[in-house]
Length: 177
Image (tube, rainbow, N blue to C red):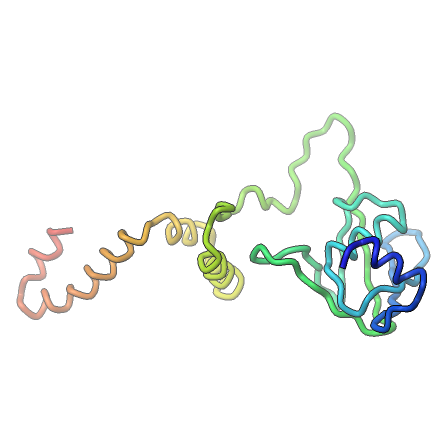
C-alpha cells in the first residue's frame, strides 16, 4: 500500500481494516490519535508519523509493546499489525550539534554484514545464526568468509579423521593438514 493510499484511507475513513492508535511522542508533546490500516509496513508508518508531526523520518524510533520496530529484516519489509486502541511510542533522536563528529550509538557500520549480492538462503542462514543462535560477529565472519569448496574440504577432513585414527594413521593424517 502506497503512502498516498494510506493518507487517503486515513482521511476518508472508508477502509474496512482501519484502526485508531494512540501515538505518544517522548517529550512535552501531547498524545495524538492516528487512523492507520490494521496491517502496515513499518517504513510507511514511520513516514506517515513523520509527515503528520513534521519530524525527520531518519531520526524516528518507533516502539510498540516495548520493542523497537525495524523497517527491514533479511532484506524483507516488516509489517506491523495493530488492534484498535494500541499505543505506539515515538522517540526522536536529537541531531548532533553542528561541528561535532559523533559516532552513532547503533554502530551497525562496525558489525559484520553480508554483501548485497548474497543469495537469499545465505541471508536467511546469517539471520538465523546471528539473531537466534546469537553467534558473535567474528564467528559469523569466519563462517561466511569461506567458500563452498573450503567447507567441503573441512567436512571431508573431519569425516575421515576417525577412520585414520582406527587405522593408526592419526599422526600422518594430521600432518596432511
